Image 1 (spheres, rainbow, N blue to C red):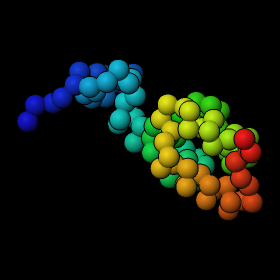
Image 2: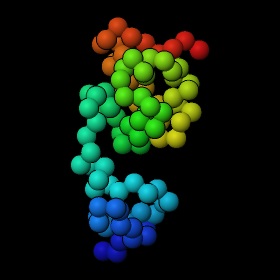
Image 3: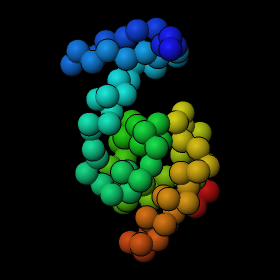
Image 4: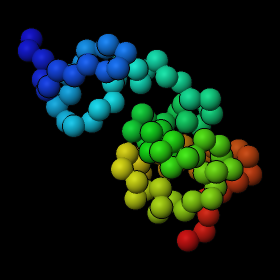
Length: 97
């Protein structure tokens, strides 16, 4: 079976194939675990989108509207119910539009 995509090697020496220009090593990504539980339940692209915005806590998440989050690359509608439930569990909600 032929590998698809371009062979890439991350800074830790992991070899992987990617068909896109995304530089993220899937091996490193599996090894990396976020501290916040709500981030663990998201897909890797959604988690990276939030982390890229500086969001590491539910209190930080509550400072954004759903629209602002969905405008970010990597965030999709499937992430919203997970985030809403996490916020509600702490008595929080997304910022109003």
